[in-house]
Image (tube, rainbow, N blue to C red; front, top):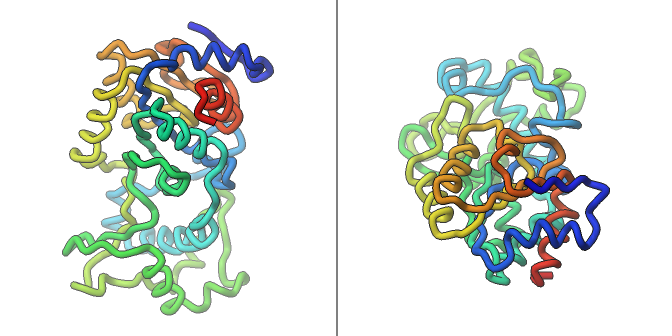
Length: 282
């Protein structure tokens, strides 16, 4: 296995990483680390905000107070992170796809930045924060429309003094006591952001799309994920069964480093940009 340290990101080192991908149709798996340069904090790793516990689907469905707190915190976060710009890492992958080097992107992210960067074939494993679905009738809504309803139903949250945050960035239970979650405008049912929560499975059809992308490729490039979530490991397992070369780009060690043919320790923006240049995509 070739290991490339951050300080070794010279043209020769980039070429060694790119050599494994050159001439191969490459599928890409990305995680939160690719979006940090766009101002979206990673959930894990160095620099990530401390978190008490994630929202599980069981808690979301059964605990109304937790659901209010989740929606209030999610609404405040969405207003902040709804429109960041794609960064150089996103753009490098889009360029590689347009150049014929990349077959598509499988992402664990819900921010939609790969699509905004110009990637055409994107499998959003964990869904998207830009849509909301009714759990009763299945109607899908644009998140911006739901956000407008939330602002109308909860005008008081526009006053900073009315919102108190925990150290993990979540709102306190007291702050969310009076928060009103809009119901489905079609049937009055419960709304949920169209993202996969802890305790939920990636929809079968969506994972099959990721499998099809891997099966139609000759190599796998992993960028910006520690692979803590099992959905990412499942993608790598599919690639390993096919004997595909594996290149990993991440700031920190991952669960799959021992299987990789090359590990590049560094930021996704400079590394992916360097790979794209070495392959003639930029």
